[in-house]
Amino acid sequence: MTHIATHRSGMSYFSSSSSGQGFPAEDQAFIHERPVVVKLVFCNEFAFKPPMEDLRTTLEEFASSVGDRLTVKKKACKFKEWYETFSTSSPGTPCVLVTNWREVKPCL
Image (cartoon, helix red, strand yellow):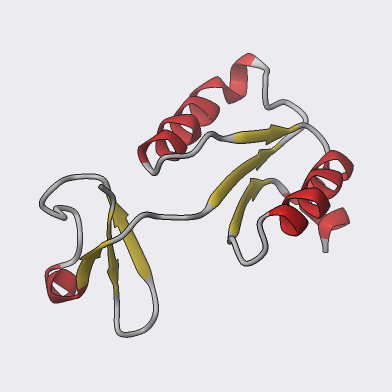
């Protein structure tokens, strides 16, 4: 189960440990268990190249820890096509985009 601590400011911290370790001490009282429903997307033209392998692996492991699979797109136009379908089939599900400035500009 993934723990989420929501700070009074609205900032959320995620931890897959059973005790909620890793949260700031002042947030320990705000820890609650619930399934995390969020889609993680990595968009980078070099996503499958060796320089990005460590980052992609880390993102895949994080997505797996919250019960999801990482979605990888190489270009913003492919992300946009995917997102239009995703937002229609999963309305209200937040999507976290990890990308660089080159790919994010067309998404704005």
